[in-house]
Image 1: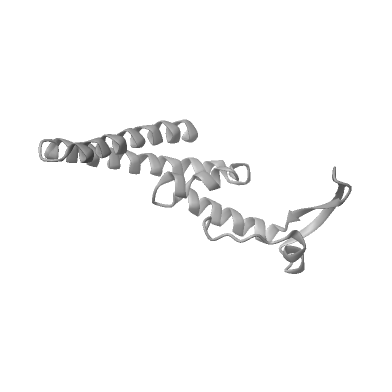
Image 2: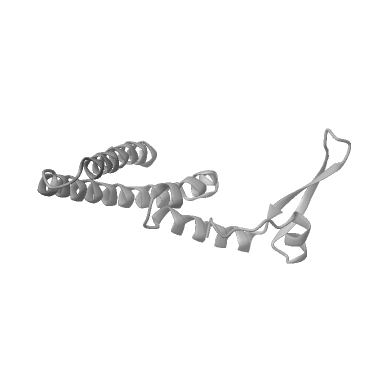
Length: 135
């Protein structure tokens, strides 16, 4: 959802009935800017997609960084539940990495060991971030 976005101008969205103009503002360069507000039906659909993104599997940078910019539009109870699921996934990922490191540590080349160490550190960092976000 987030990686395939294309830019649509407010007027294009208004023509489609997705938003409505609510104000006009003077901008520093001398022009006017129109402020738009999403309609109720589209807001509900946006929230559905937003909540699904918080629950999506995958790398957190790809799945959560974009949606976090819209956290103020989400149902925080749903987001907290999704973040707890993400925490469980990160704990499982970290346990898998630790198990693989123990099993293969002596057989792996130094670059592979270094990469696995990085993956474990990234998982621990993601866990701290998720835990703070889940409250």
